[in-house]
Amino acid sequence: MRQDDGGESEEIPRGIMDEIRRREQISEDMRINGRSRVADKMKVAAESKAEISGEMALMFTNALCTPDNDSLCILCGVELAEGIPEDYIPISDPEKMKSLVLVDKFPAPYQCCRKLTTIDRDLSMKIFFGKCGHVYCGRCVNNIVRNSKQGQRNNKNKRRKINYDKVSIASLDFDDPDICAPSKCVAGDCNRAFRGNYYFRELYR
Ligand SMILES: [Zn+2]
Ligand SMILES: [Zn+2]
Image 1: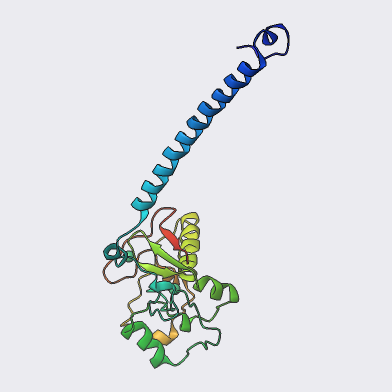
Image 2: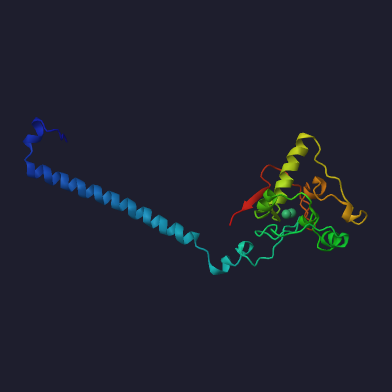
């Protein structure tokens, strides 16, 4: 149909032209409404799919991010999400150090580190989990990732194995990458190598 104002449109009486336009508008509206109804239906379906049952919700946790959580980084023993306390005092008592490492089984207790900075404290509040599923604080992951990259560059990715039963714990340097940046997961008997660029993922609050 021609809609220009010239010749031909004058041949169609104005009332009829308006009626045609009105009907066109109605069918256009119906088409749009129909589409948005389909979109609404899809949205509702997607929402109901995304909803999880109470039973399933029990399988997830927000507990790591609540103040009364007592989950600890398995490498340094820091309270996850809480991070290194501001008023922490480095431990130098050999017996206490020994107990943290041998009894509590934290290979690199943060209380034994001598070089903690405010950046370390900020990092320690972050939470990461590895592909093996074990959870570490951000400071430990930062140490692990940084040292593994350096190790790759220097072609030295092997860590010296420390026999904690044979060494004097108090004489260890806990800022040494051999201790604070292991190349394998330290959880129980996991031992999985921290390989690949994205081994760790951050857990956001
Ligand atoms: Zn840690
Ligand atoms: Zn692991």
